Length: 172
Image: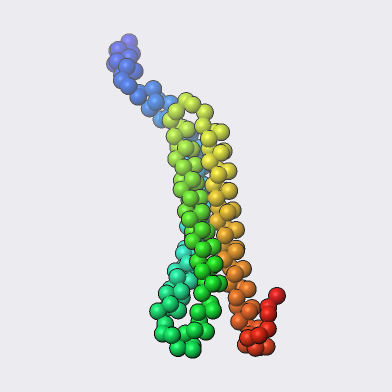
């Protein structure tokens, strides 16, 4: 009876019900397990973004170096590279921005998984929608990155053909 007299006033404290509901270590373990896949995806997005960012920096530096070069004949030959480099910069920038948005939304998924352990409202649909949004953003970012690598490969092929057959040969 004495224990009940001590516990009943505690139940009137705001948030105590929330504490009771979430104090289960099994429930917390389940949430941590559920958040592992999105956390690994976040790490993977970060690794891919590192590659994308390095390519973007390289392209931007190359454009800057060409534009700062003098106006002799060699520098004029380098100016031919600018249109392809600008396309690459645009695709790489878009890839980084979309991948950053994907990283942001997957972070929201992780947050929602933990919040779902503390609230009664079902958040499954919101988690699923945010997960699908993340996948869409990631796919768009990877597609942009693919376009950047295709522009780079095409320009390399063109330069190789020019060295082999001369500058008047059109590439496929």
